[in-house]
Length: 276
View 1: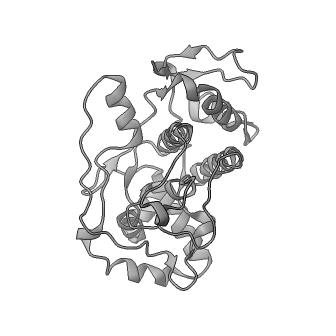
View 2: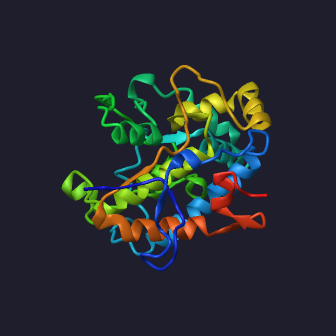
């Protein structure tokens, strides 16, 4: 039976102070305070905590290994915002022109957000099936010459969390540690929670959407985005679903993130809305 958790007082020592507390106690930060600047800082802390966890993950991935680099990448608005900010600083916003020429029929759109899926599972409701294009293209940020990522420094979580124990191109598919799928889902839920009341969708379409000055300015000003065609509304964490065999590693990784100091408080206090 899976370990179903709401928020917990995670402790570095297994078995101490990790009694689940219902997520009804989970308070969202006031809208005006959770701006894109704070969201960016929180996202960077998520990446850093995950990178620490990933050091112990068995994988054969390396430079030039690019079988997974397709157009089927889903992101939150804050992840796309960070990519656009990086392109702007590198004076490479001209790269956006190439995204507009990508055929819509090759783009995969998610059918549900990560927290939406968790909510369905917690309530034993069948989630919607995702329609995958019969033909998909290579990621536009993949350098075809040396098969490296053009935006590697700011690549979204879906990319940085993909690992395989075997070469995908040799076996036709990835071989992923089960615990990795659990940790990835939990971290994706946290990212979505950070960007609650915003948008979730395909990376290419999200970049084009936020590449529009009016949409981008509205997001930067408010930190939220209203529903828009082709995108899903992001939502807070309803709870975590963690198989018993994955509990120790998952809670340890999440504990590392939650205890991170951010703006003179902890990551946990900020996303719980309890920071003073």
